[in-house]
Image 1 (cartoon, rainbow, N blue to C red):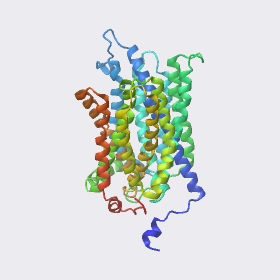
Image 2 (tube, rainbow, N blue to C red):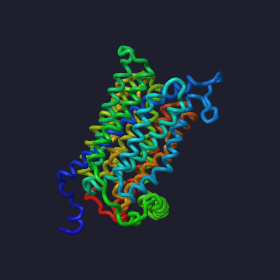
Image 3 (cartoon, rainbow, N blue to C red):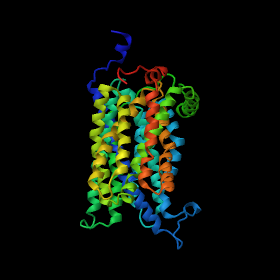
Image 4 (cartoon, rainbow, N blue to C red):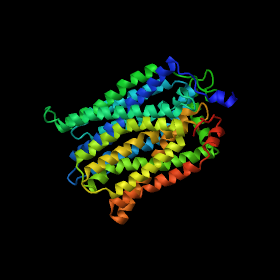
Amino acid sequence: MTERAATSAPAPVDRALRRERFGWYSYDWAMSVFNTSVTTVFLAPYLTSIARAAADDQGRIHPLGISVPPGSFFGYVLSLSVVLQVFVLPLTGAIADRSGAKRQLLAAFSLLGSSATLALFFVAGDRYLLGAGLFVVANLCFGAATVVYYSWLPDLAGPDERDAVSSRGWAAGYLGGATLLAANLALFTAHDALGVSEGQAVRICLASAGLWWGGFTVVTVSLLRNRPPHQDAAPAAGTRTGALTGGFRQLAGTLRELRGQRLTLWFLAAYLLFNDGIQTVIGVSAQYGAEELQLSETTLVSAILLVQVIAFFGAVALGRIAARTGARRTVLASLVVWVGVLVLAYFLQAGAAVQFYLLAVVIGFVLGGTQALSRSLFSQLIPAGREAEYFGLYEISDRGTSWLGPFLFALTYQLTESYRSAIFSLVFFFVAGGALLATLDLRRAIVAVGNIPPERL
């Protein structure tokens, strides 16, 4: 047996490792409800209505003395939280790598984030500033906890197992998000019969996401274990502030070093493009369905839930396909499907709810697998001991360019006054991102950072 084969062969999965993997999967189950129930469905319209109730005679609100229309408020709040993440997440990763205390960091960020989400229950009347502050804290903690969570993947799976483990995590997340969202939608739909006002129903739904996130994180923290930091990342012995001050130094060094990691940057550029396309399709699909296809709100919300359910099966299925054909080939094939989705969306008939549901099924099938396999591919491109820090850069990379897709969509609509042309314009991101990924020598990129490539790529 060659040295490479001996090193890259999957290690036997003992009981302790299975327990840790279950704990890791459970965090995706725990945190995904924040994205689905809070960010995607309930908070934006509710916080907008709260801001509108607090508006002056000119229909304006004045957060921090700045005059803005209520309809723009949530967008600005979301942008602020993302900007803060751009500064905080890489440093969070550097500290996590140096401290060797990932369990404690994950617990702290999740506790603070879930508590802020739970406190959204008290956002009522004209308390739009309270809602904004709580969401910024929750979203910042959500991103920081995600970075720490992602960094466990190389510890829990070897190169040839990583695609499957990552896919199971994404699948658990979509199932968890769909489960709570279904319960919340049932409560929201039946709020009159239950004697609850619409506002109270939304507040209960928001608070339930905080309880779910915090409660299931207990399972994760109890099953995962810390690893000692890599020798290059460990703080100096006897230095109480070694993790923090060393984290700043390590982050600065990594940013300088990354400029020389041409192939890793190549992958990040490809990911930025096609992931921006994915996020934009998800973000504008409700607008496209409402404005161009004239579909009801019930149809749109139920389609979101359908995507969550199908994404569970899609993540598992694409993970198994990747085990046979390789992750990169599977991601490239999924990008072809995404292009097909946009072509079909262009030709959808107005009012055709069944067609819209069928398209949601296709989106759900490729959504989870594309993201899960991208995560596992990037994990192969991280130098040992830098997992959390590099995943911090990975997380903010798509957030830093997340305006490109919506901008192209809006610009195309402005020039053509056609939502169909606007949705079709997003094909660019999948074609350009796929072309970059297809031309990347991924095996050489993995070797360049000192890792052993999996048998199939």
